[in-house]
Image 1 (tube, rainbow, N blue to C red):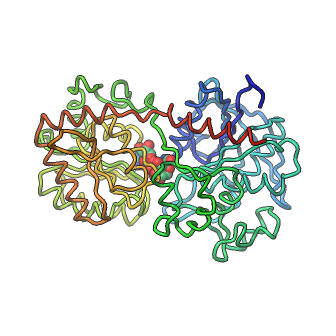
Image 2 (cartoon, helix red, strand yellow):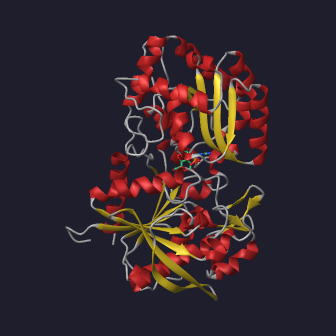
Image 3 (cartoon, helix red, strand yellow):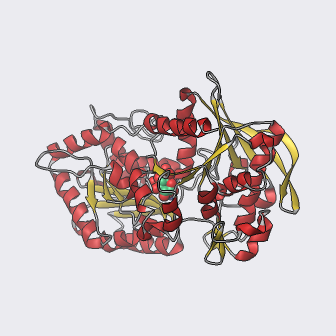
Length: 490
Ligand code: ADP
Ligand code: GLC
């Protein structure tokens, strides 16, 4: 790269907010490109054209029709639409209705779509077909999770002779090692990869195909989303079988903490809230609590009692089982509980059953509801995030900004962002526990409830929490340095 030129980075992701989101990956792929723009990066984004995007009323323009995408022996066509994240950041949407015009992104409550391997291999190839048609020479392609993990593999194998990509570097960011894109061996021949890659040195993993493993092997740089998680995933407890592969990359594996887009998540100007507030004037927070209690038809008495909240994908990772085991104690302490989530049926059922026992104090809303998510962050006093593991976690950082003190398990990004409260010193921003056990969780909740009872202390803690700064600017700078280092390597 010569001086004065910007770094051209293509973000290839299966989720980008506000277009398509199931979790934090979408938030990151919206916020990081925005934060990189003022640092001299020219970001371009690429996302499948899901049904939810089609129905989202976005201003999209068809820019390429019938783009041939060669996936192994099959030629499959795609139409490319262009939209804009901001007026400087284009988003290319890959349309192939057979793959993406479906009710969800990855599957239904019954399970994953049967052809996810083909869907995302196709998307990954489409990124290259699109780049060629646009004649775009990317400095870096930044891939995210298993869905785009084949991009580094294709680049270094089937496309290794293509002059357009000769200088392109790839980064794979692992947002969650719990999802690796593992498929039966029979899928391999349909991926358009040389057969020798179905081996231990390549994508083979216990007789199956593992997309993420391929990405880890072939990417020029692997990152993950918090420093603590970067260390954890090199151990058998958190490595999900890939700890060995990750260890071989240890010298270059880095954890860069996700950030918060405070233009979306700030109680001072959040359009979803009944009232606005800041750490100097918390009266609006009380109004938000009153509004939330009303919306959820919970007892008005809870206005003076601690109100606990959670917004989450309902997956094994998130600690729903230990929450269910402490609900009776939380209720006996006279606290309230609001949970918004969707995901695995067993957790949905369990939570709904619990809530039926306590109609005045507890509500569970099974939905994906952006507005309610913001209202819970603002209207609650305490936020629950007792995750079994948590690569970074955004909700605890949102909670801090909304003055809703988080109770977290000390793991991954939760360990990196929450400071244990010391009531005597009147310092700290949240409550941590270590053992993944209901007793340990209850102890942390109980401590939070005790602190809440001391109004003056609680106000001081809220103010410290709200003063934390997890804006993207710092982490975006780290990504920039990484891009620069990679592109300099030539
Ligand atoms: P993860 O990515 O593992 O799901 P994060 O804490 O990083 O966890 O990010 C979760 C994001 O998804 C947050 O923006 C959160 O508000 C949002 N979210 C999760 N479940 C829901 C839901 N049911 N309704 C609305 N937003 C949700
Ligand atoms: C994943 C992780 C979460 C992280 C998010 C964004 O979904 O589960 O911890 O915050 O990605 O990086």
